[in-house]
Length: 292
Image 1: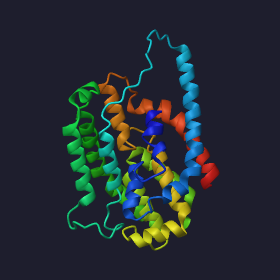
Image 2: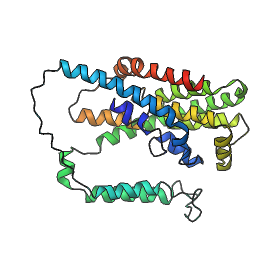
Image 3: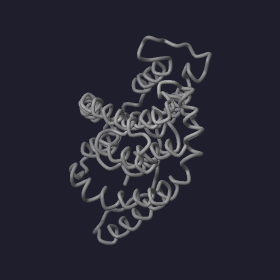
Image 4: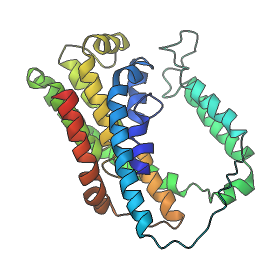
């Protein structure tokens, strides 16, 4: 449920909450459009998930034979890192296409924003309390695992997604919001939701002769064909929770948990025992209420 709620569905309200929405923001989708357009879908979905979690957790607690006692004391160290986090959040808006005074580093594949982010991460790590890092058992192995996995996924999935996007453009007249919802969602769950989002955004815009690489076209699409963008955004974020590889943070949570000694379900157990019986019925209801 941490993966379901925190790593995925909980982040559906802003571009910094989930990678596909951030890609949309970089292409020109207004930052605050997301919260206004999807909150009424996000809220009931989250409530349903929390109710299911409460029911299952209450049952597990009743069945558990727990002899440990806890003090209930909460201790927070590293408040200075909130400053670093704030800088990261502010730097999200430092984009030349959004703020004209921000210098562009074209043709470099990165800009001022990325330089600031990497610099802050480096400084934060070097200035961190070593005792806190040790207590949290922090190391870079989970990040490396995710990086290796997703380099392979990205290298092999892009041609397939481009083919799907081209086919979608050709069949544009037959494709409704509901079809985009399921197509984006199912592929987001089994590939990766960020490039899947971008490809289906491109396909849906192509239906109306618009170019995803043109920010003015993206804004026009957002204003005139909002229902398609809502369907793609919601599906990419929500269905990213279906598997460990649907969203980068999912696999990182798994890796961190396993290194902490927590037994995590395998890929197929996670999918069959948890994602399909819990998430799919809720996602079906979302489609039934909002996109049919």
